[in-house]
Length: 409
Image (cartoon, rainbow, N blue to C red; front, side, top):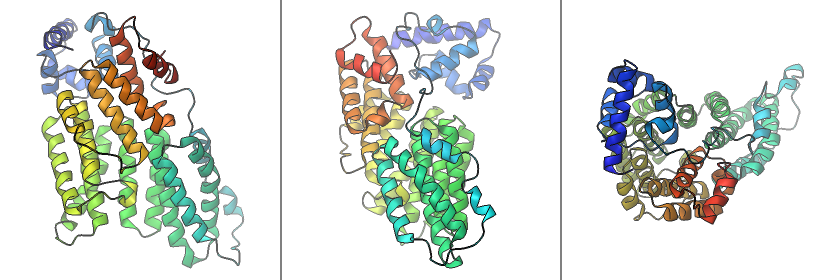
């Protein structure tokens, strides 16, 4: 959207707001935003690119999107949720009690459970999660979760702590994957069970890792106040512990990861100053670590911080800044999921600049890395929908294919 277009849109929004007898403060409250955000939108300062936000604004004003953005409706709005999901199998397993039969048979077997086998399986589960191989992950978790739930209830006392710790990691993998696949309610359930298991294991850092997963579930539910509370509570506890020069790297990683969560929350709330503040805090922590790590499967490190700097810049509408940052990043050492998400953010930035070809190219590369992730992710559907709109009646072949595979067309 050009600056004159943005200014004209702002005037239409202001006029529609007044017609409904709403003040800027009332509109801000209805949108869950700040009054300054509304002011910036109406003055044409703040871009309004994200389709769900556009729809929410139109709903509050009681009009259709095309009344605010004339000629914008070319393709149908993609569904918020896909009709089916590669994680449906493990979602079913999460339903009800995880090991009900164990409550009716309390005898413990003489042989201790094969903890080494569980360790290997948990590592494999996280490898699948980082690769966004959700169908295979669901199949594995559907078997592994009931097994470890039964084992921890029947294991000798000396084995229970480690089994609880492994159980926490399994549920964290499930929570992370559900959040990425837009299954926020299941992500919340899995994260809550991870918190409980971590506490029973006597692993406070695993509890914080569970809060990290829960915050992401809240973000997907658009419960930014709850997400901020989860992340801020962890920062409040970890910050004093990480002041010492010899602070454990695992604690630094979790603290940095929570600052990145807070940067995402603030970017989605259009709070530019707070977003940059948390990115800078994360950069300082990453510099202390000296390199990329994967403590608690957060992939926290200097590279991931810059990936978040790109993503939050796109959320704030700073597409040019995002693309300048992206050009300096080599994400090849990170997981396939992180590389793919980075390419999605690059595509989003190009879409904001109306660079259809570049955006499509980034999405195609992302799909090659993680097809299951790309074909179900809400941000991908949004950007594909926007690119279809920008293309008009001449939709490029690659974009048409993406639109079909993501359910946009």
